Image 1 (spheres, one colour):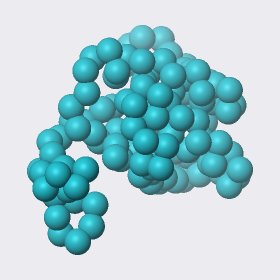
Image 2: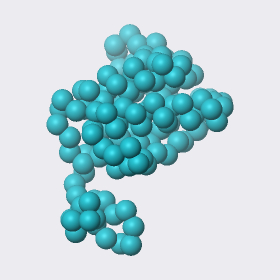
Image 3: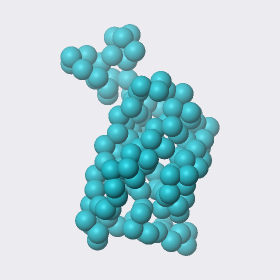
Length: 128
């Protein structure tokens, strides 16, 4: 936990996708202080033209390498979220994605919203 859902334009190689996922995971581990093995990621690849990410009036130029990332997580302090945004872009730039192509939305939920198996809410049962 958290759960990261990536939307990208199809065409990246498996190595490029792996670098993207590794870069994002490193940012989650550092910013949110989650264990290294706590990794939940889903990639959705879209044909060109089926992923529209405009600049919201900020003058940000996007390319076909845009990454739209939705993070679903328990509530986090603002400082952790800001750190995550910074670390994510730093790591993704090192992996070949321009910072202008990174769009993030963080969606918060609570302990009762998670079950990691066996039909139990492990954050509530004390297992986590």
